[in-house]
Image (cartoon, rainbow, N blue to C red):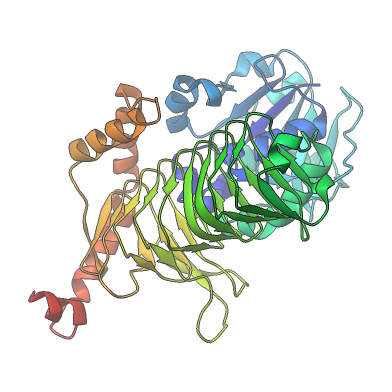
Length: 439
């Protein structure tokens, strides 16, 4: 069986996370959406059995980065034989049984096409930007079969589903268990068979692991410092460091992150930092993000009401009361930043503290200065910072990345200009931070 992962137009509803990655690269539980689909269909990741159809501007990054490399937008690959075409935003249910290989088949989730098994003549009709129409054509030929699962339509759907996904991933993946060496240094609360620690992990004394409410997985090369408490369900990716952290369940981190302070029900992509104290809750943080000391976000309104999140600048109802923030790649916050409930921050932003709750909509490549949106730093300066940051992790920010972010700067210009116009219209002497700063 071969598998092609595709993005429909609704992938834009996952911004700012999907500004810099394909939808199938989003993290849920202890693995990406791509990994979950491959496991459901019994497919081995690699160029022989997997490919994708994604937005063209992502191709350079997918080809440049070894761990992200995948056959993309390749009609020759699609023409080689029968293939399962799966929407990257669909999460298969536990116990999913794929159809027999080679038989045309359409699977539905909540009445929407989740995947189709097709022959080459249909597969080669797939085009970036045309996935919705392609699935509509498949649905016009077949009534389809309801297969269950769930959809990921917005970033908060990932956060809401993360606790359950961690439980499911732990149950389906091989467990490392716990060695006697690890047990001598840690305190375990709850069942021991729900704790998995890689042999190479370093667990210092005076650390607590609580599996009462869910399993905990500690990856290879992880370092857990003293006075850290980890509650399940939780997944700590390889080479991540926990510094006196308090992880309160429903948390996925890594790989190669540095985390301290309090974290609850959140997903943090690889190579991001939250080294100091501060609260992060019901949030999704992208890659290469740095949260300054005491940066905290609200994840509950004072009136316990429904949270709205700005999508492309327009508030969208989430249907939930517990919603934190969503932060794009290469964004940084200053010390003491206070992030409002349901905040969306784009890529390569600089968020500076103001002593008040900061704006809920921060478009890509902008700065929050004295509590309001302002033009961001020059691209050259942003790129130089990115080169320094990536080098500290043994990675690089080269010509391919620069070209990508230059294109993304143009792509996000309209949203940014509208937000700057709104910010300018709200200026005035009644603005408290303006008075305090003498502006």
